[in-house]
Every structure is written in structure tokens, then in C-alpha cells.
Image (cartoon, rainbow, N blue to C red; front, side):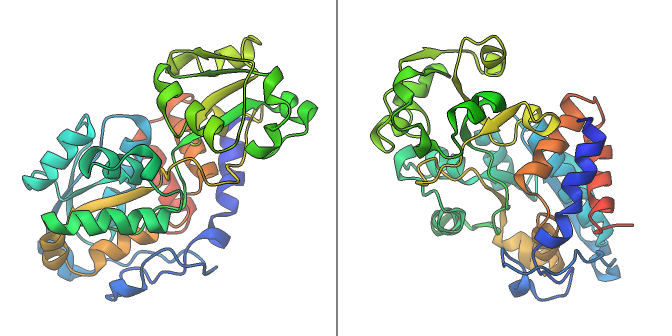
Length: 324
């Protein structure tokens, strides 16, 4: 299916999925990951925000850059003076930039924050994003940092295979592989053997015993499926390939084994105090429509259709009804 057509279909579900948040209402307590089905609200420009300068950062890969643009453009619509720094590199550099006040905030993954910043073992990272965000905040508050509500989408490892192969095997969940994994070849990253969100977790928690496991470069994770070398490959839930084609299927992590890869916007308590309630409320509002399907399509438009991240972010905000 052409990328633009899939994009429109993906956004068709945004209003039903968008959290019931009040855009820039002045009450940040209403912002968060509720179950409401209220339509997306147009961000209102608040003149009082014009004196506040914000710098929104991100790490230097497609998904992060698009998220940074979405947050920055939304905050601009709310009246803030906004700059971007969307080439921060690793999570260590990003955190250092935040702590040094070089940026006001940036999107970070729950699993990354807990393992890289706060010393948790990967197997201790909860699969539930709300619990994960709570754990991040418990540690972040010690440094004067705040993690806002998690995104609906999770950018995490996923067990994937060709859709026709999934239909042939009759599998929809990872647990459906029980009894058939012995006949299947699994490919994954070199560190997959030791990771709870990869082969180790599939063995220990799902009891799966694959015919073989072969390490493969991350850039070849779809090619090995296409060539028939792999029956199953470890993919990422927000890959552009998944947003651009129905060729591939990812299986539901029905036991909640894979750590939560939802995003939380990391910022400072002092920045929230200075910027006012529109700052966190706007950020949490515009992530309401960011489902995995939408994020796949955002990445596909940049990586496959070669559109500019800023243009893709602008289209998302407009098509979802957050901006005009």
C-alpha cells in the first residue's frame, strides 16, 4: 500500500485514540494517559508564553528527530519561543545536555532511562509503561528531573516474520510459537543471546527452543526474512518497514516479557515551573495520537519517502487536529 494512503488510514484512528486532554488548559493535572475518546483539541496560542524560551532536543535518529519536531512545533503553537537541537547523539549526551540546561527537554525511552541512567538490569524493566514511567520518575526526581506521561506507542524489540508465514503457522502471539519454534530459525542482533528482550527472554519466559539462532547486523533484519534465511527475526515495533507494507507481522508479547519502550519526555522541575502548565500539557496532548501504527508511518515518510522530518511533524499535527 502506498505510504501516503497508509498514512491517512493511520491518522483516521487518531481522534478515537487521542487522550482526553485539555490543550493548554492551565491544569496540567488533566494531562496524561487516560482512556478518553475525546477528539484532539486545537492548541491555543497563549500570549503569556511568549516570554519563555525553550530548546527541544532529541537523539540523532529518525524517530527521535520526528518526535523532537512534533514537540517543538506544538509548543510554538502554544506561544513559546522554541529552538531545536535534534542531533544529540547518545542518551548520555542527551541527559548531560538536559542537566547542563543546554536543552529544556527531550524524548527518552523508559527502558533506556532505567538501564542506562538508573542502573536497572534489563530483566527488571517493567513491561507496563505506567509502572515504568513511575520508576523513572522515582529516580529522576532525585536529580530534579521529571518524566512526563508515556506515549501510547512502544519502540521496543518485537518478534516478527513474513505475514504469509504467520498465516501459514497460524500465529498471532509469541506464545503461539510454543510447539513450532523447534522448526524455526531465529535471527537477531549479536547481543540477543544475553538479552531478556530477545532470545534469552523467549527461552526463559516463553519456553521457546528455536531450531537455530543466528546473529545478524541490525540493518539486515528484514533482508533475512525476505531471502528465507530466517523464519523469525527480531524487529523494532516502530520500524518504517512495518509502516510501509503489510508484508511483515509482529507477534503480540502476550506475557509482557519485552521491556517497555514507550517514550517519556524528560525535563526539569524548574523548567516546568518557569514555563507554566501549558508546557507539559501541550507535550502530553500531542502524543495522544502517536500509536505504533502512526509512528511506523512517520518513520516511513522520512526514511522511505525521503520527506523532511519537520514537514512530517507538521502534517501529523495538522491532520490530527492539533494545529491548523
